[in-house]
Length: 395
Image 1 (spheres, rainbow, N blue to C red):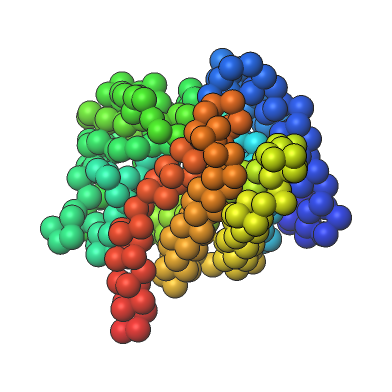
Image 2: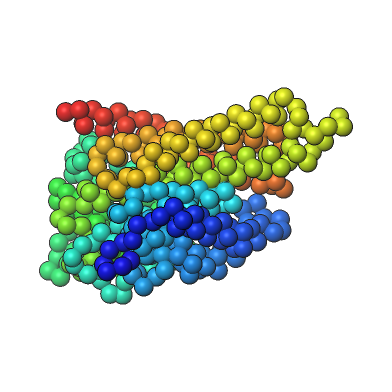
């Protein structure tokens, strides 16, 4: 930042950020997988996440933190668009999709806090934040997004009621992805006939979190369900300007775009591993990379990855989180995760039966990308939302 404005990210700056992410993967993330750990040695994860904060990859609402402006989903998104964050997430996901998801969830929640506007963020400023948006198994459908108090398709059940000194929040949020040990939740609620958004300290009286339990993939990222029972928050805990609909659209757009970028990274890592394996493995006296079927599998996967990356990067310059952008982000998540899941499946086949063993890390990539297809909106949900957005925009 210079003189109160964000400096433009040049091509050289962008490459330096990419190199920072690569070095983080090499020096911090690769050691997680030394030893027999299907998802990495997660006991080492806290120090790796701390490193991500120190070097500026992890964003935080705290202005003094290195990643506040240019970290993943940092404040520069409003000036520069999504490009930097999408590239960084993809690079990190090549090594570990779960860590990329953790940094992504932190960044999206942090960016929402940064939208508070003229009023200051409550002191102390939150550092690690989690986004509480979803209720049940899907995010809100379009009708609920536009009108949270309607019974059709489903009204928002987490509510805020005004009190003499602030607000009282009640309800349950599902499938909250975040870093471990967040200090504050960003909570979307129904307030009368509109959306409202609050900062709620995670250790407030009445707040409880239950771990989601054993999961298929993305295990390096915390996932839980959060209950709010008569949780009192002050007036300045509200971060919207009277209606949090714009913040809702921003959260969904960034969430879907980031997940699509993570899927691309996971698939790219799988393709790289398949090429190395095919070049080293011999059968019948020749490297298996010379086998037509293996060539077809790897080439087909790389074509799918290239197509997915192009789809994701179509959002690069986007900093307008309108209704149309919401539909486009949903389309990007739907298309990219499908292409990348197909690519991971194809590359896994080059390993034969070994692809399903933990030794080569391919089964982890398959688990991770499979979870991404349904996280924050299944394919069926996304298709319905895309249709409804196009219909609404045409009116």
